[in-house]
Image (tube, rainbow over all chains, first blue to last red):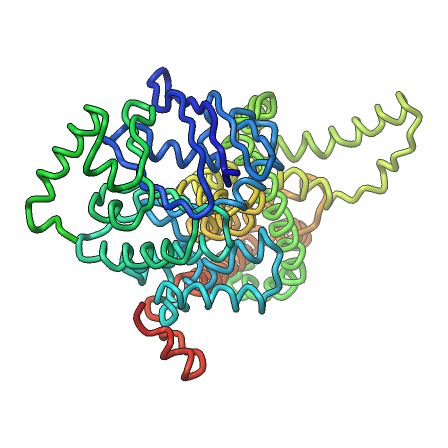
Length: 256
Length: 251
């Protein structure tokens, strides 16, 4: 049985259709790379999954429980869904007035109601995992973009989510910091976390994910292993998109 | 012949006036507190665009901003007892109108007044906190209330602090009208002293000095608070026990 099943997800912004019927079954241990042209709803898909956006239509099945994503009334289910998913944002979105350690502790204390000692222990463990222990006392404004993103990843991991959502985690970073964040994500993927990864780093997606979906104009047009999607794409739009991307990758400064 | 201006009197008035400083401060702080709490409520109503309440809030703010404090004090001082009497007659309740001290009316009126002015300032402070932080809090599974309390308000506080200081200062000066509600505070006592010895000008000079000094003290306190709330420029690296610190090096 799938870990999470998404059925018939539709979302539009003022008549502009962004998601046009997405069906996706996510299996335990899937590391799904989501690729596609800009503005095709990759980020919106992630944001609908944890209800940062409310779609017009769509259902999600988590642990035999069906949740109507389009409803605004199911506050309890939404909170539960959010507690089961961890989100890493493009702009990091760390809490500005909290230290790295407090950022990671926050959800543990407020949402999971853990004791101070326990929260601190988990937070330090997660900071160590992303290599940020030495910076635990620092505030986000003291940290570089890459460091902030690593703390944000630790914050998401600390909640022990069933599903991790990465929304273009390296798009806002200076090129020399992309590597450190990708290394952390690679390490997490290797540990068996289930995750959805929206990224424009094609080579990275190909390496780290075990399943790739290509979204264009709000629908999934290709779904397969990285080998299938990158080397033997079936759909013309996928071919076209990859051709453009490969052209970019020819240039040496884009290599990872 | 008596002196035109009794310089000494200005200072000899001060000790007697100072006895009433606590009342002035109490009035100002309580009014300020009501103002902030109610102002926060109004701000949230406006941000969340709650129907009906939103219109009521806008109506309330419009009335308060469109009328002088003095008139508001009179309206509360006379209006609330009349309303209580009406309730007593209509529903047979026994609200003891006469036992409500003037102080309560003054706090209520000044608090309502300050809330209308605080609302916009609090709203802009809340809006200044990046939307991303609220999303991050939501993504962790926090409710709006938790996010507000833990993330948004603490950060908005630092943004709003200078304006909160301003409104505290204006609320202190607003208390000088509380005599309207039969509350004897600084200015009221000054008028009483003036009535006693006809040295009105001297006593108003004493009052000016006291209010000015109080404001200076508040400004200094605010500066200290601001410095306390600021995120430090430099922080020491975190060091656990030796062995753990080494494990933390690198990825």
